[in-house]
Image (tube, rainbow, N blue to C red; front, side, top):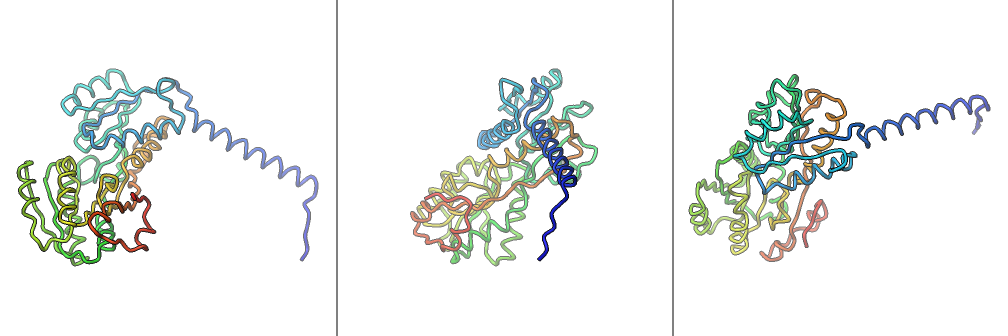
Length: 329
């Protein structure tokens, strides 16, 4: 083996190049972490208090990029769906730097209201922004909007439920079509059930009385419960969970509801999705047009609630638990 040493002049030249590269990287990093402007204003619209952690994640992510509330950024928050229209007028009058939205209806209102302005819109999550009518395509060229897409986890969510509870053959699915996401997530679940050869007992409802009646009359041959994307269903998750525990049936979901007692869930974590969308907002505030930032897909996580599993007498295989991103013991 022959080792050749670099000549002194070449070594010095290489050292200079390395120093220049490191200096450039440091300057770029500083620019990314410390916004030049010191008075950014972001309007936030979230009419669904059940997913407030998306907003928390967004703010936390923005702080990580150097936007400190009260120092170089301020937030104007709207939580009532009835106040969205007037809030959007206020956002335009104040010429906010960005509008951040939660839920498809709020996002569609914001996009329409900001047309003809230079105010970009970032949505924290949308189940399917194309099918939901927010954008024409995931590239959305020419549209001053971007954000995080949720759809895509349903088959894997059902697979994880069946892996953790292999005896499940028939699943009760409570449904209320109250959002654009509800029929889309139900369609995805139906498709997955056909592929995985399990039977779904789909129970559509409108009122709380309907839900209570359906829960009390679940057939004895039902082995599990699965939760789809629906505001009404999520608002009454405790009632559904109590029934599943009484009947000793595992519950699955296509979102990170393991913390709320769902036995096995696979899908986006609300706070993580908020954090992910903050990167899009940061790039926009630093000068990248929203139309140049393709819509991204949320990260999916496997969550297992061993406390619930123990309560219903379900022994989830170790190799499944070992793959979980989050575990409640």
